[in-house]
Image (cartoon, rainbow, N blue to C red; front, side):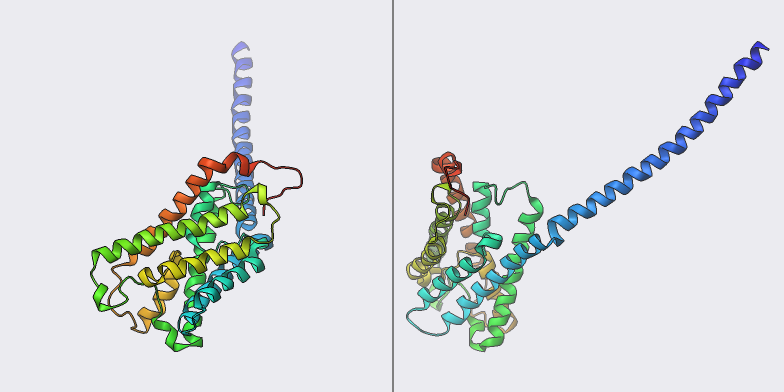
Length: 290
């Protein structure tokens, strides 16, 4: 009898174990469903939500128009070309700045990421990746639209080799490289000081300041490098030239327009943080981030 009494709880225990395993399996399935549901919700909130979609489209649209301004204005031969491009950028910033921050430029994105504002934090990796993607796609579409509007614009793209005299010139490459770094620093610093600093929050001049900094840069180094300051602009202007066989020499100077602007943005963000981060992040009465 004693042995029988011992067997019953053992059998019951074995049944409990089986039941527990079944419940555990169901709980695991439920947890997986919840994780799947939460993943879908995160995907929607970060990419497909109306607010996020508006941000990404704004970056796409602004970059597309910027590339069109560059290509179409450059073929006009008008002495106000530099001013027109800068004012075009200012228009798009004022139109779309309240939606996405109106970066329209990977170099600006890099500078703001180094600055690491609450409005565009490094931790939001999905938004960062989508901004870069939309800027490059916008640049490509803008270049193709400019080609469709004016066939003469296809040969317009930033290059150090603006004549046979400069082709293969190391000194010219270095001059253009330095110019791209310095004036990208000017452009991105203008963005940081006028559009991310709490001390000037709510100002109405940031768009014009950023646009005019581009105008000044074009006048200063346009003859040296074409004044790109923006890898998305380089890509958007070059693709139609390649497709239409309008690349005069080659694209061996491409590194100038990818490395130089990126370095300018990094330096601008680093120096801003070094000298201004604490004061610029301080929320004073009535101040909000632009």
